[in-house]
Image 1 (cartoon, helix red, strand yellow):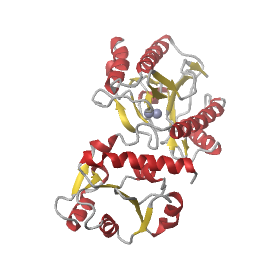
Image 2 (cartoon, protein in one colour):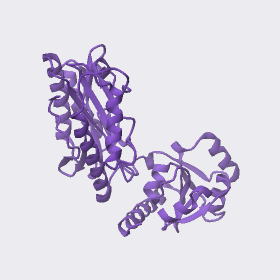
Image 3 (cartoon, rainbow, N blue to C red):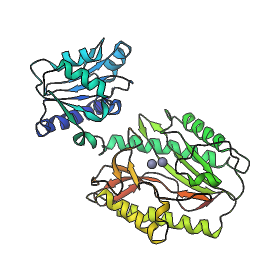
Image 4 (cartoon, helix red, strand yellow):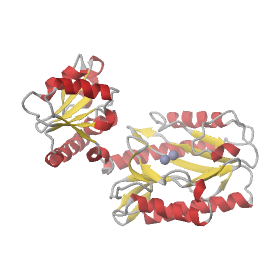
Length: 362
Ligand code: ZN
Ligand code: ZN
């Protein structure tokens, strides 16, 4: 582990530690692997992290003991045979009187078992307090996100040259996944979406056997992963040429996207960004056809806090990385979505994604 990373984990640990008194707990139990990775650097698929005032304890089973020691030297790494027993002994009988835990990540069964082993009233569910744990990114995280964007952009540029009538949607998705991987992506951020023609009217279409035809709309939603950090971007293209109606709808979505991005800055409520995008689409009579939120945070998870939606009560802060992705979907016809990732700043934002969002005919 390089020094910069060790310092970053230490800073995250200390920041949470400062919040313990306000949360009314003496320790926090983490089960969600993305949060554990964020706090410790451990990238395994199973484990528990206990944040205690004196130290961080990373509990893993035998498969991960070597890896955990290498990835998280700043933690005390403990091997358990049974998870519950490991947690109970690592919590310490006397030290932690009130232990917070990630309520959203624990099954009823695990909760019951833990409760059975610990003193009554010892386990305190935490949900709200941990929601925004990862939402503000530090400089290193932003540079990892930029790298993920670069990989995805380069892959798309290679794949565009190859898209044309007669090619199946799923072959384009496979080609995109292959190129991202070949360029260094660890995985895909999420299953790549390639939709064509009528399929573009489904916001989350799965790439199928449909062959592209001249005049088709093509929606591609894709992302690469670099050091765990994910990119997320959507481009809508047209094959051959676009008719008047398509150009009109594309221009409305683009306007909603541009105005929302113009409004992004620290201190603005997330629901306000959603309202701005939605109002543009509503005014043109397509409100019912914009059936999802305007955006979401992105980082170690492709969907994380904050949510840019009408019901969100979060506020944008400098260092958050969020998507702006309005869309209009006309069932039986076609759909348009335009998505960029932006870095929130005090006085505005920087668009991290690289592809131009002007209508592109390919
Ligand atoms: Zn997306
Ligand atoms: Zn997205």
